[in-house]
Length: 418
Image 1 (cartoon, one colour):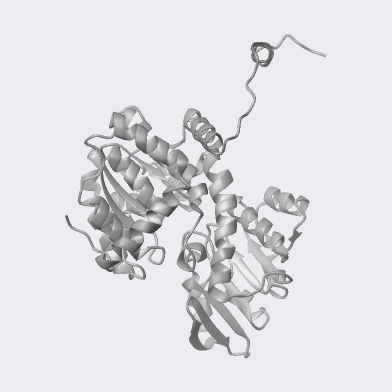
Image 2 (cartoon, rainbow, N blue to C red):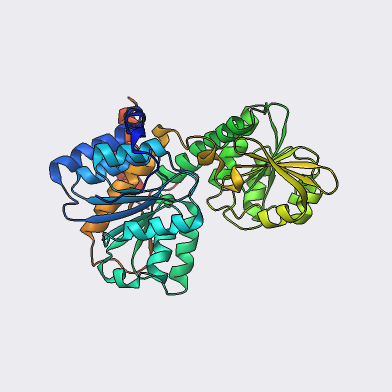
């Protein structure tokens, strides 16, 4: 078995952490048991480009248990947990191509490596595997049944591909499932982002002025949790409805230019490029902290930041100090990459349980629908979304009401009025 990881000797530590996460992934565990009995993915090859974490490891266990042949690479150079990669190779015989801190060349080499199994299914967090298939490995496209996409940024890219008529196989947008974005994006990103900021800096958030750029589900999770820890939170937005919603939720709304004079901690979560730029850096107060929770490291204009700095130095792990020509110091966390995975462990397992349950069931659905889906981006089928929610509630010991026959008739009728 070919693989490329940092250190196989870390496997025992990784195995313990995978088992710990498994305790909080009851829905995925149930699906794994179901897959083990029915083997619905027998003979299916899956190339996965995901964050190499304990939660991802449990997803791959479920897929392999269902009969799939799986290969994994990282979807971000700084998100790989090397001990997890080692455990997947040694204990689960899953080929992994990922090293924490790998350079860009190695990152794309690893994507090519997972494609060597000639996948029927791709699984992405950011659509990089899909991009490589469409740009460089078009020879593999005829054998590709479908793909899944985990994150907002990837879905945005894929919808553009569909719009332009260049998407060559169907994609299921796992990110758009209610049991994914309402929980993973909001509660997972909210908690793990602040976890990353605190681990990297050890600052006290209470009393700090925190600026959150973007009020999608990730941004609102970050803003809400920062406020819950006592921070004064300002939101910047370009979309009027979201800005209005943030204001009605009790946050201060202003332009990023105006917010630079106020903010002490800046967190981007927009999925767009150059959200914080040269003119914004120059107006920031001394000691301002910058970090990103969007998928790609393009939200903070790193080139501009480097060009206006007269001195740079690493002051602690994941913290780089930039001294500007005006003497002010700005602190960039985790090289502008995903702060929650670069400086912390990513989302808690209990919320990833639902996201990866959607992934597993969406793969099964795609295999069953092979040849019937058009080359476009699909949402997760509603029945899968509801099944994941039902299983999660049951695992938490929560019971809910069901409609009576009379209530069902009422909802299906139009005759009843005032």
